[in-house]
Structure formats: C-alpha cells, structure tokens
Image (cartoon, rainbow, N blue to C red):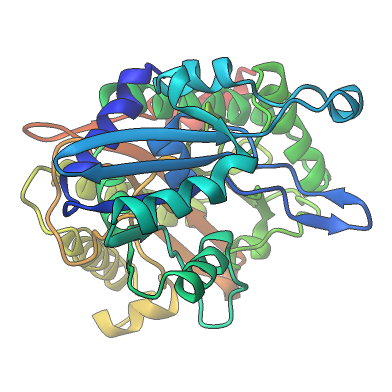
Length: 417
Ligand SMILES: [Mn+2]
C-alpha cells in the first residue's frame, strides 16, 4: 500500500477532531492460545488503517493543538537477546517508512508515559480519543480500555472519547488500491475453489477437499484465511456456520463452500455450491437456479443511493416468490424456514467489515458481499452463492468473476477437469 493512503487516513481522521485533542492507538499483541504458544499476531485493523504498520506493541499518537497536527509512533527498543530468538523488532526507520511518519517523530516505548505527562499536564490537552471497541458487555478489557482507566485515574480533567465509529465509517469507503487488493484476494480464492473442484470425488472427507483450497493459498503466498473455511456436504450445508469439516461428501451430495483468502490484510469471501459427482439432480438444479437468480437480480439493482436494507428485502421477495412457485412454501412468511441470514455485509480489512451501514444508503467505493442461500434440511440440500462486489459511480462491479456459476458452466467444468 502507498504510504499516502495512511497519511490521508490520518489527515481525514484528524479533521474531525476538536482542537487540543490527542488520540492514541495500539497495535495490540498476539493472544495466548495454550501454554507458551500464541495465536498468530494480527494488527488491530483501525491501528493499521491509520499507521500502515503490521507489528505488535507499537503505539500511534495523533495530536491536534492550536491548529497544528502531528503524528508520532512509539516502537520497541532494539533487544539483541530477543533478536536472536524471534528476530529483530521493527526499527525507527522501518516504522517511518511503513507509515509515512517522519523518523524524528518515532520514539521508543519507554518514552511514552513521559511524553503523555508533558502533553496532558504541561501542554494542556483537553480531549483524549481512543478506539474503545467493545463487542459484548462481557468482552475482556482491551489495551485501550485499560489505558483509558489509567489515564482517568491520573488526569481526571481529560475528556475521553471513543474514536471507533469515526474510523470504521471511514473504512466503509474503499480506495482504488484497497479494491484491487480485495479483487486479488478474490482471484486467489477462486483459483483455490477451482483446484478443489478439480480434485473432488464422492467419498472424500470435507477436510480433504479443504486441503486442496489451502494448498493454493499457501502456493500464492497467502498466510491467512479470511475466516474459518466452511466445507459442508449434503445436510451439513444447511448449518449456517458449520466448521467441523469432518463429514463425508457422498455421491449425490451438493458441496457448499464458504471460504476466502486474505491478501495484504484484505479479505475475500466467496460461497460456492457444486455437486460432488459433477451432475446436479433435477431438484438440486431447481434450488440452485433460484439462489442464482436472487444473486444476479440483487447484484443488478446495486447503485449509489440505494438503501442497504433493500438488498435484503429484494432477496427475500425473489426467494419467497420462487419457493412458492415450486410449492416449497405457501406464504412469503414461511421463507424464514429456508433462508435466515442477511444477504450482504461490508468486506475489507475485516471479513465482516466495520462501519455503520444498516440504515444507510450505498455509496461509491463500498465493497459488499452478496450471498443469498436456501437451506432445506429435510432434503439435505444447502445452497449459498456469494460474490464480492464494489459500488461504482453509477452501478456495480463484480470483483469475483473467475468462477463457473451457472449449472451448465459448473457441470462443464466438472466434466472437463
Ligand atoms: Mn459473507
């Protein structure tokens, strides 16, 4: 990513702040998994969006004082022992280069508290902005929340504000470069799906199929999935977030995949349904075509100004009408038995990307998933088809165009692999 992207993000964020405000953002650390093992470190995405830095422990400080704005970083001091065990920490110069922040504004972490004391008490800052994200009432305290409490105890005159929503709303609108990263993530994901299909046979375990997808990701330099892969055969496909992947794909089953590669921290999210033996049954074909119709028609209606909620309304209307036509249900209200999730969510640095979109209208630069589905448990048929799209100036562009999508295209692909 060009550093101008992060510089521009900082500039836009600072524009929304009052004078005499200081903002502090934390990169975070890898959480413990078990014993002395940790989960892989992933940077706090709002921190990354403002800093361009993918290293743990680093702190970003943005200030606005008497009209003057400044960005500062606090990085770890070089430690020769740690360097031999886990490698060098990011240097001041590297941090400056990744972020576009001048190297004279990069300090060591042990200077952080002294710096704050000077700013809060001597300079006279009045506002402190922190990313106080909280996913649930019972969620553990984040570094920012612990920091907020510590600051309150020492400088009770400071007004503490939450910067979370402002940054998340900025993230809703993607730059051209962000869109290209998501397109690339989608391309690698599609390649993985096609390689999986090439090797798919009845009798295989769901996790065996998953392994073919994973091989393509690693082969393309992708280290992280966008989320846990769903590889669900037959009836398992009617469980929305099935992640066991321990079942067997029997002859005659439909295989539902929901998976994604992460490319330079940007995610793809594709759902894909195909027959494990290469041929749809008549019934499977009927259900598949209803879901594909919903995908195509809902995608076609996307344009700036359309309320986000209409995507879901339209999906429900199409699915209900078609399900009534085939006699699966009698009234539209019964659709909830077979379709029970949202058709779309924003996509970006997070797979279920952040930003308040629920009651808002679509705008150019928003990247969304479109993912209608039907789940008929009593027939062992689960179908979900998902594309990633970007809202353009006058309509929509599909970013995930590299896959066979119609019944005919899928059967031809399976016959000729
Ligand atoms: Mn999705």
